[in-house]
Length: 225
Image (cartoon, rainbow, N blue to C red; front, side, top):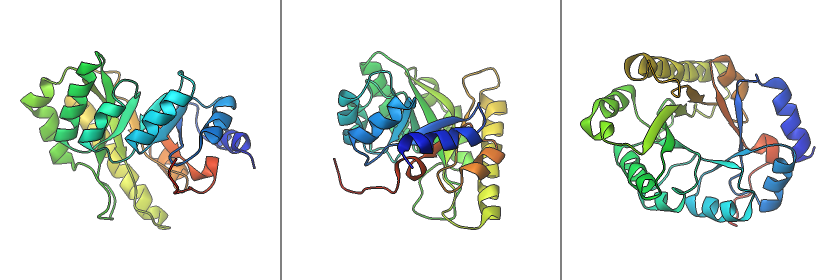
């Protein structure tokens, strides 16, 4: 099936209020353009320099999401244009994003990444750490970032029950943060969870954003640009 057909197949089965992020990391410009020409406007990348290069070569109405582990020294390469940073996993990173956003005279939307999986390789906050961050004086002084929701990755497993539990955990974190810190902020509304293998479970558990790569573009090509 073509990229266009893959996109159409996914869009038919997801709710209208679920946003599809096409994960284009490692994919060539031609593939991204094919998805763009099929109507896709939101793409996810996980390497800052690769994203910065692609942004210069592709249409300017694309909304670029950064979805991978972001090193603080790489924030400057994407701060001028990134639409959403989904993977804020430390206070230090959020502080740097705020600083680079101020340099570009803009406010950058961010998601707090939570550690919900059983795998040690994943990054993210636990609930107490996120609560401490949002309660801190340092956070209240960050005027160039906006926390619009949460993100998490489930364990890579065929155990659907475990995946349901982990996504339900992320939804519960979202609900607690919403009631405690963002009850009057309509912009705090995003729950980014679900990828090619588990997005249907994620939607069942309340996902508002799914991050789909291989089901759109085929298996990943690990060669660099």
